[in-house]
Length: 254
Image (cartoon, rainbow, N blue to C red; front, side):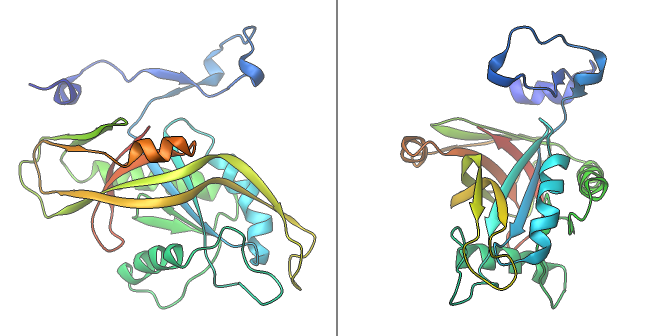
């Protein structure tokens, strides 16, 4: 039995993590029961936003507040639908438009909106308030539990490892999402909607690499692309995801 699979058989409660990170790593932080949270499988929250989107100015800060959780990997993609001659999104990429469209198409919809919060590729919302976003995370976790099988993903700078009690599966993509792990605030210089307003960008995705696919069972793959990303101070999330905007069934942040 592998080390990862042993986790499936643990009867102990999951460990606890402090949700408060003291500024400047202060040593005088006193832990209380109120600042601890159960460690759960990592949930991936993807935010599609734009500097030309009026609702983003209002909703994005609420979304950032709602995902302040060690069990959540949060990623930002800036789309280009609102780009105009007077102002083009400084982080916008056509590739992120395509990723958002893949989700929308998978769900059989004909329209796209921003901000859009997509959780584990299975539920979404506008992030109009913190409760909505927290609720989306809860629903996504329940959907994952309802699968009835387990998959664990681990990754480091040299390889990605998968361990699962499901011996066969339809093919899933193994994808590494590289992002800049910080908050960047942009003051929008032009435009009739958001001129002079500021929009925060947390964990902006820089690159997406498909490194292989999983069809069940255990698997180990090399990650030769990570050292290059580390030179740029990027962090990463590895995910196992159904192709074409499907469900994320496992994730690991590293």
